[in-house]
Amino acid sequence: MTQQPTVGVLAVQGDVREHLGALESTGVVAMPVRRSSELAEVAGLVLPGGESTTIDKLIRIFELRDPIRARIADGMPVYGSCAGMILLADQIVDGTTDQLPIGGMSISVRRNAFGRQVDSFECHLDMPVVGPEPVQAVFIRAPWVQEWGGAVEVLARVPEGHGDASGRPVAVRQGNLLATSFHPEVTGDHRVHSYFAAMVRAAAP
Ligand code: GLN
Image (cartoon, rainbow, N blue to C red):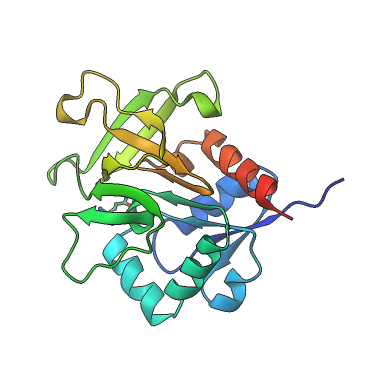
């Protein structure tokens, strides 16, 4: 049997436990990452949903920001969900003045794009890279991708019939970086995590 890679979940704030469970269901070894010595042990990393401004502050305090950026530059696969997508974006629209993304993806994301009043929104959307069955997408004060560069592959968009949100990219990939506006860790459908686990296995030496 081939050895399974270890995948970390950044565990400073946000829905860490759900991602650990979803990752484990794909067969990889999952572990929380709170310090740079733990980051060094993982072959891939999930940046969970939560509050991107808080996560940003904490990774600077815990001196994790630069090590994560270095691992990204080195080719480590990273998957950001919701706040995690915001952290991976090169540009944030409606961020706070002192908010610094980790960056790496040539995307501009709009925070709380579905409207500040709209706490959550759900729909089914097509995401062919994970299979023919639509994905149940749960958005919680979610961003969407406002603009994106040529190296970015759009994996899913909000379907027609949802006003200004329709057509907006909500799952994107650029090389070893994957991001979704929605939270697949809360639905019990772990195909997005399986897709990410395959990215990690493919990148492993
Ligand atoms: N609105 C949050 C932020 O800006 C993201 C919400 C989430 O991750 N569910 O970080």
